[in-house]
Length: 177
Image (cartoon, rainbow, N blue to C red; front, side, top):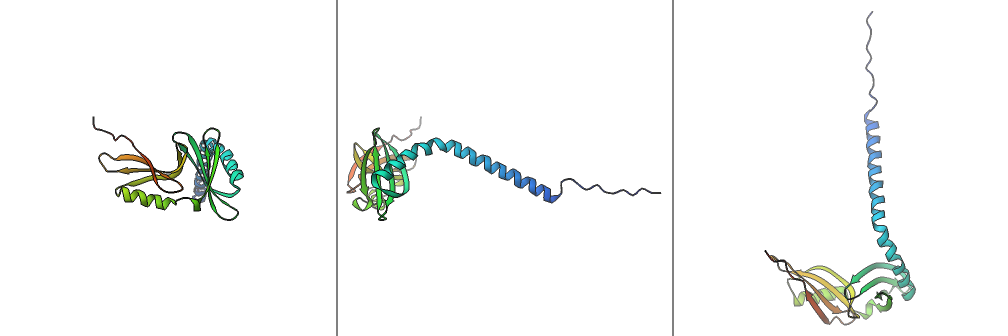
């Protein structure tokens, strides 16, 4: 009598491989999310009291952005909306977090500042435009570069309410040694 040989079925068929791959992928995603949250938690914790103080000071119903600016002093600028749907900027300035509140309609828009810089410096490439403070004055801080070989970086400051030029600082360019 001949013995019939039966093929043994593989333990890992395509469905099981797919399940293993999906579980591994979900585990990697979960680890990345947990790592990101761990890294960002100190920053989020530092923003929380700033958000609360600004909401209380200006009766904000919605916060759309929080910006930290460090120049001559550390300032937090919170942009949000009140219950009348007005856009409000709240500055918390210095270590004592002195509050200054300005409605967007009382100031110059970011787009207008961008146009003013381009008019004065047509070759400017913008890196960042954000509200801030300079020597206690509420300003738009414009960080931009000009030229190539070497690229030259500058900070220009414009009054937040009027849009008038306040000051400019140029960073030294890298030089070949």
